[in-house]
Length: 194
Image (cartoon, rainbow, N blue to C red; front, side):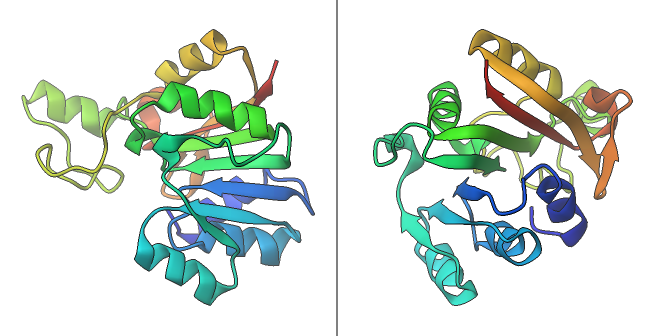
C-alpha cells in the first residue's frame, strides 16, 4: 500500500518527529514519506532482498529480518510508533506480533485488507473467493496466510489489552468512518497498550 493519499491518511496518525519502526516496510515508501513529511526517524524491517535494496536507495534505514522470528532485537518502548501496514495478514503468528508491536512501541498502527468489505462478501455469496484491488490474488497463489475483518481486529485488540485510539476504514484513499466493516477495503487501527 503505497499510494500517496493512503500514506497521508496513515501519516496523520504519526506524531511529528516520532521514532518509527515499520514492520514489513516493503520498498520503504511509507517510512520515506514519514521522514520527509513528518520529520520522523527510525527503521524499516523487511525480509525480501529487493525491498531491502529499494529501502537503501530511498535513504531508509532498514534491517533484514524475518518477522516470524519476533522482535527480540528491540527493547521495550524503544519506538514511539510501530507500523504494520499490510503485514499482519502475512505472518504465521499475528497475535504474537501484535503483542510485540505493543511491547516495542508506545503506539501501534495496523492496516490490513478488510475481508468484510461488501465486494468481498458478494464474491463469497456467489461461491468464489474475492479478487479485488486490495486482495489481488487468486486463492491458490496468495501471499496472505489469513484474511481478517475490521470487526475481527476489534476483538483481537480487546483480547490483548490494547486500547484503540482511533479506528477507521480506507477506501480509494478516503477515510470511511460510517460502517467501515462493510464500506472499506482497508481496516486501520491506531492503538496503545491499555
